[in-house]
Amino acid sequence: MELQRTLRELMRVRLAKFAALVLGVTIIVAICAPWLAPYDPVKAKPWDSLHPPSSKYWLGADRLGRDQLSRLIYGARVSLLIGVGGVAMAVCLGILIGVTAGWYRGVWDEVLMRLMDGLSAFPSLLLALALVAITGGTVLNIILVVGIVGTPWVARVIRSQVLSLREREFVVAVRGLGARPGRIMLKHLIPNCLAPVIVQASLSIAAAILLEAALSFLGVGVRPPTPTWGGMLRHAFETVGQAPWLTVSPGVMIFLVVLAFNFFGDALRDVLDPKLRGTR
Amino acid sequence: MQKYLVRRLLNMIPTLLLVSLGVFALVRWLPSDPARLLAGVDESGAIDPALYAKIKKELGLDRPVLMQYGAWLAGIVRGDWGRSYLSGMEVFPQIVHRLRFTVQLGLTAWLFGLLLGVPLGTVSAIRRNSLLDMAVTAFAISGVAIPHFWLGMMLIVVFAVWLGWLPYGGFNANLFTTPLLWIQQMLLPTFVLSTGLAAILMRQTRAALLEVFREPYILTARAKGLQEARVIWAHAMKNSLLPVVTIASLQFGTLIGGTVVTETVFTLPGLGKFVVDAVLRRDYLVVQMGLLVLTVAVMLSNFAADVLYMYLDPRIRYD
Image 1 (cartoon, rainbow over the protein chains, first blue to last red):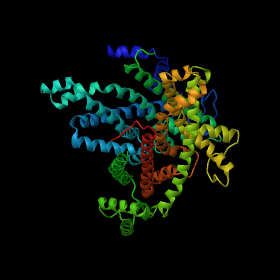
Image 2 (image 1 turned 120 degrees about the horizontal axis):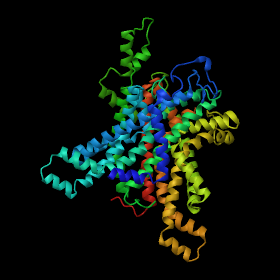
Image 3 (image 1 turned 120 degrees about the vertical axis):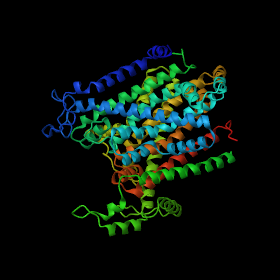
Image 4 (image 1 turned 90 degrees about the vertical axis):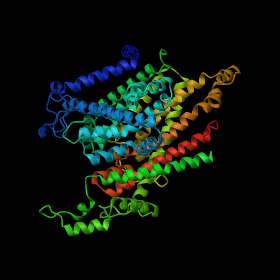
């Protein structure tokens, strides 16, 4: 019921409708990529190198003669997978760290929070760059890296929530009844501190997609020939003088998807924040 | 206040040590061995073990890892940052030279973002719900969502490829001796780097001003018959700028981190590009020192933001 109400409220926000449309179409395109893409996205056809947009290649062909539209369609899979997967991992790790730090406090809390301080002191792109250089540019590794880079903010939010929740009557009562810490954390603490994390997570997916694109652009992202939007921009940049049109479509897609996740996060915050509820 | 500052500075020491340990560990995990790189391989693909051992000893890589870490820290304090394993050049002067450019770019972009974001946010709040407000809000929303490297590429396509007004990239100008060339070469990178900051500041200024406009003292000022300009500048702006300035100063660190991409797109001789190139070449020492210097720069700018915040808002007490 709560979920239904939230969704109903969410769909009343105009920008959320736009976000749902863009994200819905992108997700469907990503899932149906093998049926929608007109050509093999990795097959090189040197004779069609830098072919301008035409009825044969709607968005043109890159330096190796690969169809830009097909690569764009397959690239949606990688971008969404890394964005959603990376943030899901950050949320899982952050919850684990934040809940245990807030519950047990003391030395455990100090050690974990100093670690989080250290991790968040690094500029995120540089940290991700070094981590991907170490682990190698596979989709799984980049999901792990995005997850590690995003963990500190989830841990901090959850910890602060747990610190206040652990003193509340219902938690004290459950403790008094003899519930074990694991059960208290799983059944009572985590469900009660998820709202701000869900909002921040949807905004973080946008940041994660930008991070992946930047990594691919810098040359340490997902290894070629796997098509990614950032990687496509990197290739397009190398031939920007001869085929400037190649720079347009991947950039527009990144921009639209990031914008949609930002709108969605903003709308979700408005809906979930009781102070803002009903003000639209 | 002094007590808080000292405490805050002391708190930075363990974080700094953790960061240095993190940087050291990260670089040690890079999948390449500098001694192997320097020893080279013969036609059969093998490495001369004697030469390999000699190079390892020379670089100090044969010692236990903790000793290597200690020696590295001691070197930093002494000002001996070592030599690049690949180019053989001293790391310290190279980093200082590139940091100078990165700080120059960061500061210019920061000022540009401030000069663009605050006035536009102010106009947007004053002319709420007008066409101008909508245009400014659209710019603010786009500024946060647009990938900076893509924006840079598009600007290069338009202003360098099509119109030929500005250079593709590169930097060899001096603000004082060749100011016109400096502007030409810095204009696009500065704009790209400052877009995110300008967008954030626009939203923040607009929101803060709209909130202040609802305060009773603004109503009183208007009721007294003060000119609208005076109400805005003397009363509303003064009280709404605090969160804006705080965010602007906190964003300086983010700007320094963001120079990595901008410097790469425009092939600028900054520290960000230097570190990216070093990571791609697996140049251990340069990556190590570059990462550390950039991280410390971000930490220091955040500290400066804290100090500024305390100075600006006398209501804040940290004792």
